[in-house]
Image (cartoon, rainbow, N blue to C red; front, side, top):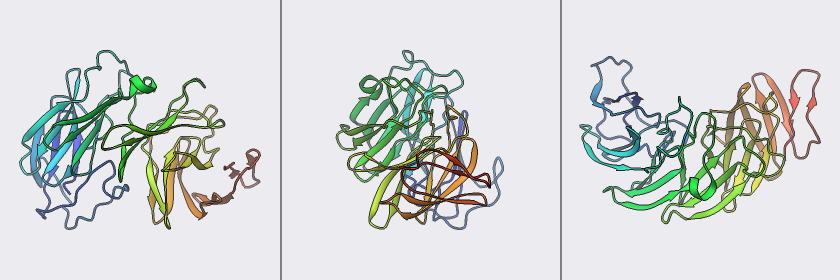
Length: 329
């Protein structure tokens, strides 16, 4: 994999010793944890040392480029438009560029936000790109549009104070997307599962009562435990697990934010060796060790504090050592 830095106005690709590299198909890579199997990576860089090539870009973007085979795909802003670019990996040559939507002038966002923040994803046959306005488009590798959704027209605008930034999650035959916002009860936060072949919504799941709304700029992840697979969402005050088939909430660990209403959350959850790590807005990284997912039993660790979470605590209780018992469902 070519490790990359995507800065305002430039794409810089670092030179690796190996000509062949792993694919990097989506945000946080093939394993959803930011880990690459590459070896013999360079330890030093300068403006010239270990740089394969540089490419000037027409505008800023906060999205992560993704890599498949000999191609790099990245979201790029140019004026009021947002494009998906395909680059040839060895030389950085532009192969094609396609617009993601022409509603940028119609939808407003935070002035400091970059609407080219969600990262594209690819399965090696098609590439799927989303912008912060809610335009989701599928292209084949030749740049032909397969399908397009204007999610903001179907489900309302992506109203977040600093602009929408969650990336779609690609897993097997579907794209998963979270829209976590601090909105009135009539416009709840929700999750989407979209068929990657047709672009049709398989399910839309609103968060149930008791879920404390907060703006989340994070991206969901996949948790595998034994033969089970779940979708995990970090929602500031709570971390939730969801059934992939229905979107049904399977468990919830709540009370993670000291603020009321909860503070917004930016960092995404991550899984390693069946252990779930999720930062909270007001706290450091939290580790959840699963004892029994079916009964939502967790060992919760934050720094040197440890406690056990089980179902249906009536309310938060303050422990004498300063740690909180957080309700879980």
